[in-house]
Amino acid sequence: MSQALSTDVLIVGGGIAGLWLNARLRQQGYATILVENATLGGGQSLKSQGIIHGGAKYALHGALTGASEAIADMPRRWSEALDAQGELDLSGVRLLSAAHYLWSPGTLAGNLTSFFASKAVRGRVDQVKGEQLPPALQHPKFKGKVYRLAELVVDVPSLIARLAELAGDSLLAGQRIEPLREGDELVGLRVDGREIRAQRIVLSAGQGNAELLSALSVEQPKQQLRPLHMVLVKGESLKPLYAHCLGGGPKPRITVTSHPAADGQWVWYLGGDIAEADGVARDEAAQIKAAQKELGDLLPWVDLNDARWATLRVDRAEPAQSGLVRPDNAFLAEQGRLLVGWPTKLALSPDFSDRVLAALGRDGIQPGNAPALPELPRPPLARPVWEELLP
Ligand SMILES: Cc1cc2nc3c(=O)[nH]c(=O)nc-3n(C[C@H](O)[C@H](O)[C@H](O)COP(=O)(O)OP(=O)(O)OC[C@H]3O[C@@H](n4cnc5c(N)ncnc54)[C@H](O)[C@@H]3O)c2cc1C
Image 1: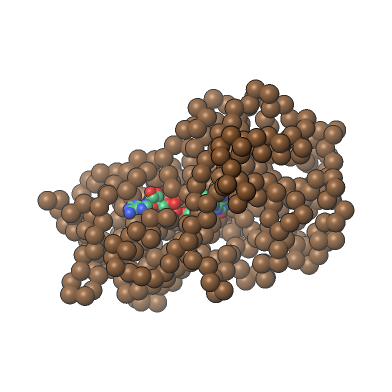
Image 2 (image 1 turned 180 degrees about the horizontal axis):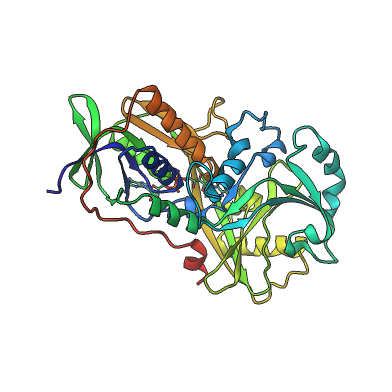
């Protein structure tokens, strides 16, 4: 049987939430082990669009109540980390765009002027024109208004790779997870039969949290899944675009991000309303048709004749929503040594870590004298979805 281990904080799940937390804990001197049962980032994180929201989008449907929401501070915290000046040294992580844009097609533009002048968004949003427009919108036929949001878009594969680097020797590939108890108390986990004792155990396994909780016979918190049906399109004529296109409703009609493929072409990744309920109900062919129609209506000058298309079904994992859960903060629940949560957004991983660190501080959990780790089987990095689906 493998050697028993002990550590300060045992983390389960190597998506953005677990990896960010792991890096922060290590930086503060905590000993950690992070267990991943598949690939690092291969859950939701590498399927995300990489937008570091600051909350401006939520102001559209009135959910943003003020600067007290954690999300408002995220673009600043991420920028500092990307400049190696912040809570983590994320130098080497590629910034895809220093801004995300809101774009309202011609017919809607008038209605939105007063919204953008309103108190809710003032200071967060500036209108851009002419050469300041995103390259894909710089066309004589483009009509509508474009606003620049103080939000970033990061290249998630390079982010996950950097966080895996910061994890040092703490990563462990492991499949079978069982509780390790002393009496009634959970004192660690058994991973593929190996005992790992820890002062605290954090479940940050995204969708996997529900199954882990049930393996530990823990009933709360409950998880909910939100299915999405995303579209990818790759073509030589595509230029980078990072924008929500507004459709008049509370949700963006379409959200486009652009990702560099290994062969030098751009891949547009399409989310927003098109990927939600109606999109989920469509089969792959119908979903691609719907996206072709959207892009044809909105950006008729973009030549998509030689483009290649794919779709991706993926669920967002979140805490079951009650009136008390707000979308603009990470979620963490505690029960004895066990902490479990969902960042709810990639952007909110720093907030997820804050919550874990606050719980450790409150309980007086200090970095201990955990023995050095032996060499552990390391989980691999996941490949970008566009390389998998549109090689
Ligand atoms: C299509 C899409 C687009 C999105 N776009 C954005 C965006 O632009 N901006 C934004 O802020 N957020 C976005 N999100 C949300 C964001 O992706 C998620 O909130 C975030 O990635 C969740 O991170 P996580 O680490 O909690 O989960 P995950 O990334 O899902 O990671 C969980 C990890 O746990 C592992 N795991 C599961 N079960 C076990 C187990 N039993 N043992 C060990 N390991 C286990 C999984 O293999 C996985 O690696 C998007 C989500 C989706 C689906």
